[in-house]
Each structure stands twice: as C-alpha cells, then as structure tokens.
Image 1 (tube, rainbow, N blue to C red):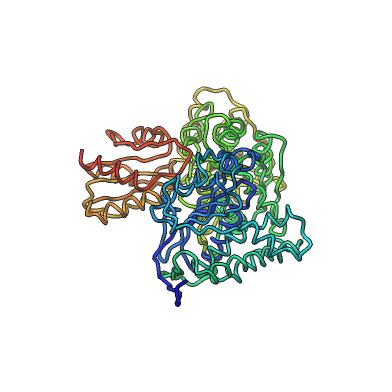
Image 2 (image 1 turned 60 degrees about the horizontal axis):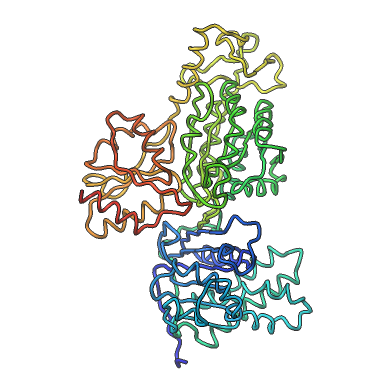
Length: 616
C-alpha cells in the first residue's frame, strides 16, 4: 500500500458495468451517470441488455451491460472501449472484456467465479484471468457478495434481498475510483425508494461500504482519478434518457401551444418508457391511454386531434406497420399528429433491445397512395427534447402528421440535460379558422401562403364540419371522386409539406476545403462527429453534414452535397438515406458505409473506412 494516495486528473473516462440481467447493472450505471452529470461532467451512455425476459443465471446470453463515458469537455459517444470494466460474474468477464481497453482496470466479484460459474461461462481452466491474458495487476478482485452479506447482516433482510445489493458495492467502489460525491447517489436512492426507506438505507449502506473498501485498500494501484468539468454553462442539470427527453419535449410543446396533450399508445420495446413517463404527469394535463393494439393507439390519437388536443402516438418499427392505415387517415384528414418511431433491430421481432436506422424508407413511403409526411430524426438523447418539441410545432402549425424518428441507442442512452427556459422556446401557433370566415368556411379552405388548411375545433358555433377517409372536394369538403379534384388534392397535400421551412444543414469541421464530407442522420451524430475529430487531429481535411430534418430536406442540401470532392453517407442500414438523397439530388453518387449490427458504430472502424475512401 502506498503511503500517499495519488490523484490523477483525466479529460475523459469510460466505465462499463456488466453482470446478469438481474444484477442491477442498469441502475448502477444510471446512478453513476446522474452523479457525473450533476457535477457538470458531459456524459454519454449506452445500455446494452438482452432481449430475454430472464436468461439462465450465469449464462453467456444473459449478460446485461451499461457503459457510460464521462468527460471534462464534450463527449459525443459512450466510447468504443472502456477504461474500467465491472464484471459481476464469470459470464460478464467472458463476454464484456472485448469492450475493455488494453490495460483497463477490471473489477470482479470473486464469489461469482466458482467452478460452476466458470463452467457456465465456458472457461476451460480455473484461472479465467490468466486464460484471457489479463494482467492480474489491473484486476481488483474482491469477494463482493460476502462483504455485502457482512455489511447487511444486522438489517434483518433475507439473503436474496441482500445479494440484490451487490451492484451498489461495485458502484461505491467506482465512485471512490473517480472521486465522486456519494451524497448525490444517496439522494437518488432516497427518491427512487421513497416508499421503501428500508431498501434505500440498505443500498446506501452498501455504497458506502464499497467506497470505503476502495479507500482502505487503495485499489487499482493506489490511483484516484478526477474529471473536472471544463465547460460549464450555468443552469440546472439532470441525467436524462432520450425517451424521457422526448416526453418532456411533448409536454413543453403542449404547454406552449395551450393544448391538452394526449398519447394513445400500445407498449412496445424500446418505446414504452415514453408512455410510462407521460402517465406520471396528469398534473400537467397529460392524458395517456394504453390501447388494445397499435392501430387503436394511433386512431384514438387522431380522434383526440380532431377534438382539439395535441395528439401523439408512440411505437417502434413493427408498430409503424400496424399504424399505417390510421397515419394515412391523418394525411387525408389533414389533422396534426406526432408519430414517434423508436427504431429497433428488425425485420419482424428481430432484435427488440438493439438499435438500427432501418425504418427510414418505411416512414417516408410505407403507406398506400400519395401520403407526404414530414420526418424529423433526433440526433442524441438530449436532442430528443428539441426534436419532440419541433415535431409537435410542425404538426400543429402545418396540420399534418409528423414522424419523429429516434432509435434504441438514443432512447435508452442518456446525456447531461440543462433544464430549458420554456419562456424562450419558439412560439407554437396552430392555424385556427378566423372568426371572420364564419358562415363561408369549408373544411379544406387554406392559408394561401402556407397551403395549410384552417383548424376548426368542435364546439365553435358556425364551424361544424365532417372529415373522413374518402377524398373530399377542395372547395366544398363534400365527398368527391372527380379525377381532377383528386389530382389537385394530392398536389396540395404535397405542396403543404414542401413549403415547410426547416433550418439549413450545418457543415462542421473543414467546411471550406474538406477532401471528404461525412453525411449521416439521426442517432449516429456522436460517432460520426468523433470520427471526424479524430481524422482532423491526424491532419486530414474532413467535414460533417448531419441531418435532423429528413422531409422536407433543408434548402441547402444539394449545394452542400455537391460542393465536396468525395462524400460518404454512413448509416445503420443498407443504404436507405443514401437512396433518398440520390432521389432528391440530381447526379448525387456518394460512397456508402453501412452496418446493420444492432450496435452503435465503432469510431475506430469509421476512421479506418473513411481513410480508405480518402486514399482511394
């Protein structure tokens, strides 16, 4: 043991918690993220858990992981590999060590590395550390389970409940390793278990024990690491997941518009947390209905929209398929509706807990008839707030269904979120029918400048009307099968979407003289930005154009894409956005980088692939 503890300051570090899906790794990771965000660190997280309801204990397929990247400055990704790996059992070490950097600190619970555990994890020897070629000097091996039992022996808790607290011991040890303030973690637990104070107290006691173990033994070569925040914007911060940020963005938009928020939804991974979160906010006038199926969820939201509410329906890719008929109805009725698609791995049930960008063409074109629909793609967990707000504003002001694309990576991941000032948020002004049109208004009468039809909320005297799925006459609103009228209505609905003004796409990096432009959309922003930064640091001329607004595309899209010698479109599908851009921009022929692995991009792989394109 050293006489004096060494405190090293780092710019950033990644920690990965891993264990059985019942070991509480997501909770431990969330608490560590919250502690770090609260003290001003930038964070990016990646929960990585199996789709099994409950895999056999100690099995290789049942390992759950949570990686968090914390930094003094801005961090864009959870990190390709971690600096600290917590492996609560043998299977976690076997499957998760691939995500650890060479020389990473490994924390293991030796009580979960018995002969039976090693056999389940397919180890061939009794020394897994040596078998995997891990430097034993980088391993903190401690009997976590036994120490937790000793710590809680006088609480009267049963053994099963005591063992569930193991994750908090590991969390306490990691908090010591990175000089974290335990009081923030304690407050998190007191709030989470407010109705079970005994559980909160037990977990707090175990966190303190893990912290004390690190302090008393000077674990990990007697080093403590500190990450000081270098860029602090004054304000109140919280660690927020993408799904929660989406819910908050919807609430903010409804408040700004002066409307009740209605969510009609059917539970589906990984979108269900939006329903769960919104159901907690009845005090804000939020109405949530868990419907019997996807179509009912969308149709009920459309009914709420007709009645004058801000209407939302949430789902994932399989649910979009089932909602498509009601989404079509929203198009022809020209009613505001926000459709949230939290993309996951497909096709069919596919990879329910993993992430892809494979629903793009479905939300753009996957309906019968000419059904133009705006599409916005959130770029990060924190951006989900703004994306949800902007989708709501667009739907309400342009009387159209709008699709908000997120994905499992940004929905389950989290970032440090500065609570916004709603007074400074953009105004939302629905196009209510003017009173002076009373007596001469018809349902499809439009604002000549925007092409948006006026909204008459039921209950306004003199503005009674009927909407439906049959085509209507442009002038009278009566059912019409006239060929010329149908052609006109299709063009009017398309023109209304085309006229929506969205911000220009911004070019980052070497925007004036880049030899390679990287193009992406949605949740890949952080990884593509990190790849660009790494290439620029190596002396390469590289820029990034990342799209948040997909339909309509920004007005400067063609100008940007045709400006550079080489362009690569990188996406987590087999080329859907590249195909859409080729459709919209004449003579655009980009390079492509495509993966459909259910996992986020790996920055080092991006850098290698983009380097080959530069050298081609």
